[in-house]
Amino acid sequence: MAKTVTNLGFALLGLINQKPRSGYALRKVFETTPMGSYSSSPGSIYPALESLRKAGLAETRGEGRGKGLFHLTPEGSVALHGWLSASVSADDLGEAMLRFVFLRDHPNRSLTVAFLDSFEAVTKEKAESLRQFLESETGRAMPIQARVAVEHGRRTVEASAAWAAWARQILDAEGELE
Amino acid sequence: MAKTVTNLGFALLGLINQKPRSGYALRKVFETTPMGSYSSSPGSIYPALESLRKAGLAETRGEGRGKGLFHLTPEGSVALHGWLSASVSADDLGEAMLRFVFLRDHPNRSLTVAFLDSFEAVTKEKAESLRQFLESETGRAMPIQARVAVEHGRRTVEASAAWAAWARQILDAEGELE
DNA sequence: CCAACCATGTAAGCTGTTACATGATTGA
DNA sequence: TCAATCATGTAACAGCTTACATGGTTGG
Image (cartoon, rainbow over all chains, first blue to last red; front, side, top):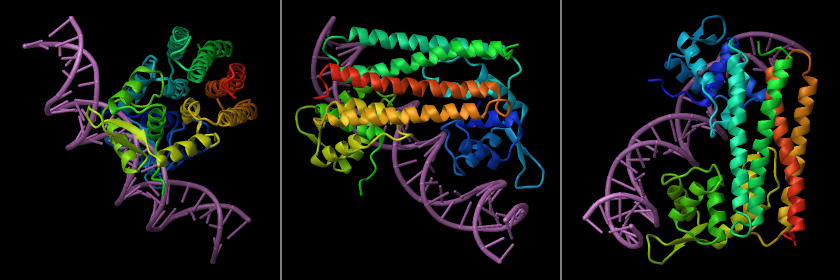
């Protein structure tokens, strides 16, 4: 009964997995880094943390200020691992980069390789299906401007696919995949 | 007191501006075309249409089935026009393609040109700021994998910028901008 | 001492999702 | 006649946003 963790929830789990942080510190991450369009402030993070605690995935441990620092529980660790291990699917693409970032913290490097492989496969597939859509729709039926808009989608997923291939090379070259 | 129309609301206004449609026909558009990850079904569209009606932006006119077909009111037309005329800003980028599609239905072609110009400017700017971020962060501080993730963002906005330039050429060549 | 920042929360409200429910019409 | 599809809705709920509210600590 895994209580459905949201993307924001996983983002938080990923961050406190890197190192224990306070709610405030977590907010700062969202405010200052280009990570996550994930919301911003109080009313989002604190309730989300509360729900993680209730779900038994995170807990606070003592120390001075406020309620202390959030740590992963063993269950939280399992949940995070499960999320990271899932293969990329077509509607995941928004969530995908978030996972990629946190995959780095997972000791099993083959998960990163698997991620990049499935990410590339899915984006290539999507680019191809858009290409076919555009091809089939030629002539009239669909106005040029609409086709141009679809082409935008095609180009960006294509860029994503190219990125995946590049990323594999780079990480390999840097010895990050061993 | 413009009652804040959502993206979904504008998508609906744009569609019924093209031609009057029933709620069901509108749903079909979202289901069958690669337009809009915009939701899908009953519980989204009907309430949204209701709120457009309440806001005086759309109305149904008679004829056989159900409640009839939705038409724009003059106020709806003004609202749609205002939305289309706005220049692209940095956090708009998701919404932007939606607008681009509907700009085609606007008689004033210079709006499309203005859109493409500001779209290109914003995406180029964003790409540049990410490039700087990556450059400043070299060495340690930021782990490679995080940098690789940011690079993904950079590449996709760059693809968007390139698309804008291309789109201007194509539409111009097709005589769509006159 | 005062501003800035650390730190946490609550309350109201809006959107959208899922799932359920209903009935009319059309075509095989 | 029976299934599919047209057609419209409603109720419950989840998630996030905005805005408000509060108080401690630190540095200039």
